[in-house]
Image 1 (tube, helix red, strand yellow):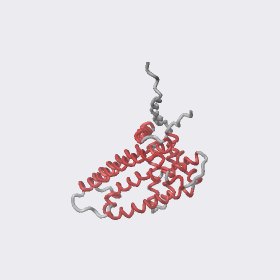
Image 2: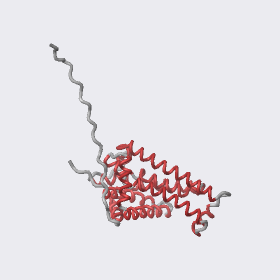
Image 3: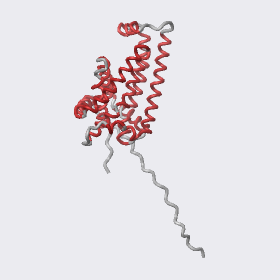
Image 4: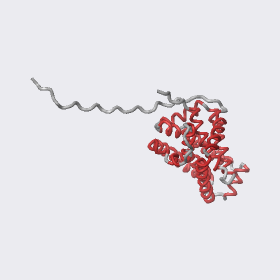
Length: 269
C-alpha cells in the first residue's frame, strides 16, 4: 500500500488583479466647457505658484517655437501642432494639482514633477502615438509646400501677406484642411486620455478609445472646448508668449474638470 507523500502540494498560481473597468463616458451640456474653465480658474488661484511654474515652462517652449519659426516658417502649422501635442504632457502637473486639491491635499509642486511615473508605460505608449501623428503631419506639411511652391519659397512677409489677403486659395485650403484633419485626430485621442491614465492607471488604448467616445457623444461641447483651447492658446502667442504663463495652466486645470465631467466615476466598493 502506497504511503502518503510528505511533499507539499505546489502553490496555486497567483491570480492577476483585474485592471480598471472600461470608462463609461457621459453626455454633457454644450456649455459645460465654460464651467470647466471657471473651475480651472479656481484651481489656478488656489495653487498659483506651482501652476505658474508650469505656465513659465509653456512660455519658454513658445519662445523656442518662435525662434524656429523665424528660420523655417513652412513648419508654422506643424510646429504649432507640435506645441499643442506636447501640451497634455507638460500639463500633467496641473492635472495632479487639481486632483490633489480635489482630495484636500496641499498644492505642492514637487510631487507633481514625477507624476508620470504612476503609469509610465501607458503614458509612453500614448506619447509614441502622438509623436507619430506629429511626424506624419510635419512631412505632409513639407509635401504641400513642395507641391504648390515648385520654384523659390516665398519670403516670410510674402507668405503672411498671402494668408491675410487670401491669395493662393488652393494652397491655403489644402494646407489648413490637411492640418485640421491631423489636429482633429490628436484632439480626439487626447480629450481625457492622460487624466484617465493618471487617475485610474488605465491602459493607453482604453484611454484613447474613451477620448474618441467623449468626442462622438458630445460633439457640440467638444467643438466649444476645442475652440476655447485654440483661442486661449492664440491669446498666449499674440501676447508675445506672456499670456501662456496663465492660459496654459488654466487649460490644464480645466482639462482635469473636463475629465471629471465626461467620465463616470468608479463605483465605490
